[in-house]
Image 1 (spheres, one colour):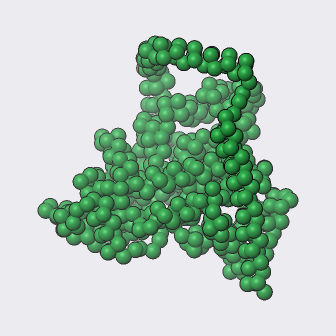
Image 2 (cartoon, one colour):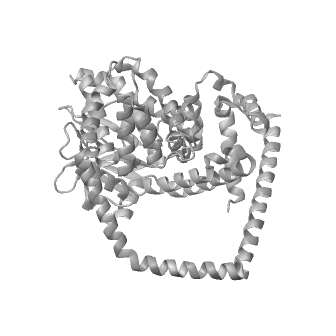
Image 3 (cartoon, one colour):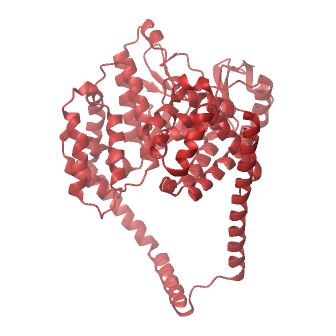
Length: 522
C-alpha cells in the first residue's frame, strides 16, 4: 500500500521534472485529452533556461536534483524502449551515473561492518574515492601483506532506504497510471516497476556483481583481447567488492588511445566480436558496456568493469537471434518470419506470409546500402517495431540485448567511422550457426530431447497423482460450485477499501500541492 509520504515524494518529483523541462521535452503533441492538457501545463511551467537545452540535458539536471534512485530509474528505462520509445531511451542512455562522493570514514564503516574485520587486517592502505555512482563509489587500496593494488567498491550509506522510499513512489505512479490512463495499460507499468525493484535489489548486493565478474572471467579465459578484473573473495561482502586494479585508458578517451599508439579499427572489431561471443556462445553478457566501463591496457586488451547490470539469453533466444541475423544476410525473409512463430514470440493467429512481407520491408533497404553503413542495432530496433504490429510481447532479455548492442556498436563506430559491422560479426555468427544449426546442433538437440523424456518418465508417478487430485477437485467444483471461505471474502473487501482510500489520499495530496504551487508562483 502506498503511503501519503509516497504521494508527496511523487508530486515533488513531478514538480522538479516540470521545472527542468523534462515534461516539455516529451512528445506530447501526440497525446489527447487529459494527458495532453497536463503536457501543455508542464510546458508552460518549465524554467526559461530549459528551453535552450536538449532532452538528455534536461533529464540529467532533473535526475541530479532528485537523487541516485532517479538516475538509476532513467538508466533502467533506457533499457526499455518498448515502454518509453526508442528516442527517449537513447536520451536516457546518456545519463551519466556520476554522483557526489561520500566521506572515506563512512566507507570504512561500511567495509568493517560488511566484512566483520578491522580495516588494517584487510588493507595496507585505503585511498580517497576516485569515482562515485548512484549506488556505490570506488577507492584505490593496497592489500595488507602483499601490497598488491586493488579497487574497492563500497555501497553508498543509506542508499537502500532511499531506494525503498522512492520505489514506493514509483509503484504509486504505476498504479495511478494503470487506473486513470487506460491506453498505457498495455505497457504494464506495475510489472515494469516490479522488474526495476528486482534489478535494484540485485545491483545493491555486491556479492552478486562479484559472481557475475567471476562467471564472465571463466567464460572469457581463453578469448583473445578481452578480460575482466579478478575478484578478491576474501575481501568481498554484501556492501563491499574488492577486485583487481586496472591500469588502462578509458575507451571514451579517443585521443588518449590514439596517442598511446593503439589500432582503433582493431579495437572496434575486438569489442564487437567479443560481445557477440558472450551473447551467442555463453548466453551471458555485460548489460552496460558504455565507454566509461571499458578500459584498454597497454597491449590492446579490453577490460570491462561494473557488472551491476547483466543479461542472459537461453538457448532458444540465442538460436532465434542467430537465425534472424542469418536470414537477413541471405534475404530469406520467410525463414525469419517462421523463426518468430516457432519461438512462440508471434501468436499463431497471424499469417506467416504477411509477417514475412513486413520483414522484407526492413531487409530490402539494407541490401541497397554500403556494408559499413548498415547497423545491426538499428536492424533489431526496426524488427522489434514491426513485431509490435503482430502482437509480439516485449521480451526483457531481447530488449536489453538490443539496447546494449546500440551502445556497443556506437562505441565501435566512434573508434572507426568506417566500421563494417557485418564483416566483423561474420566469423563469430557464422561459426556459431555452423556449430548449433548444422549436424552437430541437431545431435545436441536430440540429446537434450532424450534427457527431457527421461526426466519426464521419472516424474510420471507424481504427475499421475496430481492429475487424479485435480480431477477430483474439478468434479467437486462442478457439483458444489466455486465458493469463497469467510476469510477470503473479508480479505477481498479490505483490499477494495484500501484501494479506494489510496486513490482519495492521492487526489487530496495532488490538490494541496497544486494550491501550494499556485501560491509559490503568485
